[in-house]
Image 1 (cartoon, helix red, strand yellow):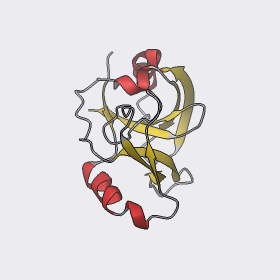
Image 2 (cartoon, rainbow, N blue to C red):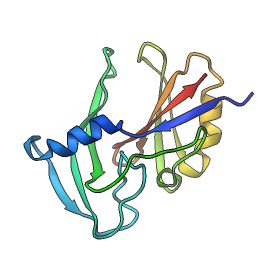
Image 3 (cartoon, helix red, strand yellow):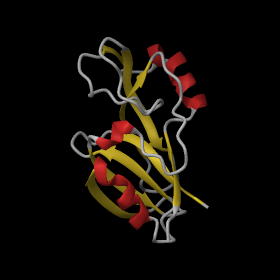
Image 4 (cartoon, one colour):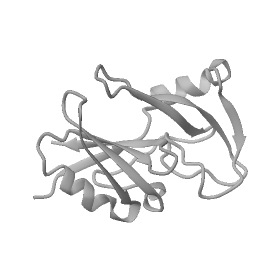
Length: 155
């Protein structure tokens, strides 16, 4: 049975606030993109182009009241639009990366973890969501461990 899912980047209201307050956030760095791919934007869910400016800063990607609350470094393009993906659509920026998937239940407790090549992501997401306890998946780059996006089960 196919389960529908939705890939989501950082919400627009959060990205806008982050971009407006970037200069006041400790440790924020402005970076000019010098390789493609290499700077995945967590708002547009696309790799930034050479010459673009991105912000690198710490983002709390799992702001929950469980032991799995988490934050880490991410990039956001300074001039971009939010990702608009259809249900079950995988963004291109995930297809060429080795990914780490952390699966959570409705209480924000991790119930499984996997690694996969991005080209195999859709099939793995389908297998994960066969478990009715699996509510959402946080996707990270497996090497550096940076957060990419969240995949939610769609009822």
